[in-house]
Length: 372
Image 1 (cartoon, helix red, strand yellow):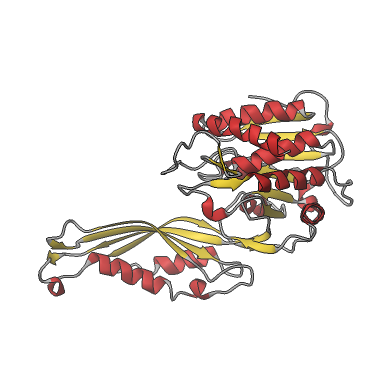
Image 2: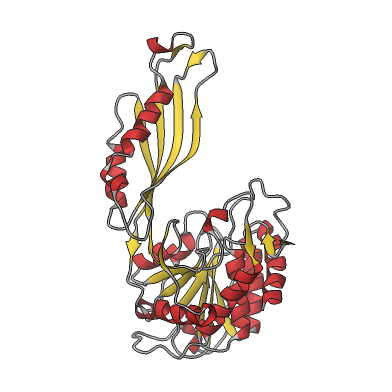
């Protein structure tokens, strides 16, 4: 299983450089070879989702994404390099390694299965937003494959992304006390934001609310007190809080020479990990690792948010450390990917889940499903 996962990654990583469609082509070919009937659905602007179903009884959804983040400063990002039992390369943890594991598991199992590869996850999440889940998923639920260090995340943080611009008359650098400093005004905003109600929430599955100052531009030169300062900031909102309310509170901090523009808002959620997909995954994890998975909270946005909004309970689970994603040192252990493939093989081989309502997925109908 480990060798097969590596073979897949060695094909997926260079394909990702050419775009997610090249990744979908390989995944579709493999899944059809494993007895799946595949459908490519156009989402927006030519982007596509891949939906794959294997004939049989109702099955929960397993989903991940074929697109990857930019390589940033990664050395040789467009090939999978093995160093000391770890695979390095662009997207190997987020989420091509997860994809390789699910493809290997699909080949190794024969039970009912429903798999989706959602496009644009690293962008605006249009793939899962476009997806229309079959009715039975509102009962069975879904598993979203992302790096969680094998924790079962049935809760996910929300967030608010804002752009902040501060302006001031500036002044001579040698007499800073005589002029208003735009950078200090922007830093004052960040300090005030930390006192807002959403920033003081606590939750047993998460650390205290965090903030990421993703971009900062300030000043015109050493000869002048900064007359302009601009920042792009992301604030976390824990379950129990409202991201919309947090956005409103942040916007109200704008006054005078300070502008605050809300760019994106996504809500947190928390579900009990007792829906059928989560229970089946917990059993499969326990069979591989010898004990049930730790229940945790996912700090990053994933496609689970769009599914939960559509009434589909979703948990997030996968191999690798999320901190390594989007970094110059993106890597994942081959042992972990092998274990993920083993867990998913057992998951796909689980007995039929009882109590599902609604029609069967389209894989019970005759005729090819794969389109353009």
